[in-house]
Length: 177
Image 1: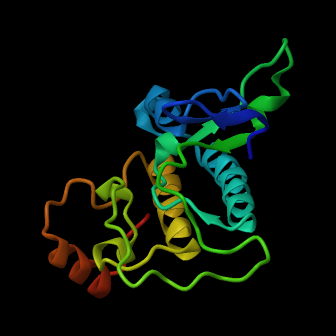
Image 2 (image 1 turned 45 degrees about the vertical axis):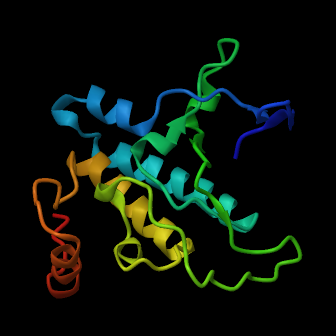
């Protein structure tokens, strides 16, 4: 996770000053030939981004809106490229605390908020209007990594209704080959 340099409350907003990250996954993928990264690169950043997601979950939060723009690599700092190997998670605007600091899991909200992320990366539970969990973060993470390596998720060109999408997911295993 990011290093926090400062945080506070101003008259009209709350703020937090954190590590400045480099390019996000979406920018990197689009800059690559054929709009996709190599398998080795995809697996490497996949493992690192999964570790970052694990850290977020360990501190009791689910992200709930992962997409390629919410992951970024580090930057060259004072001529030292070692931070380039780090992967950071960005944009916690829809994050939700699922666990109290003492480790007690909070019960699911009776009426969870509507999913506000990108439909392309939405987990199945978002379409069913269910509370999103760590499992759903993992599902969104998988879709991000598939898009990095393949250039697109398999359903990107399909235009189906929400119910049609749910039926598609339930009846036909997705082909990630």
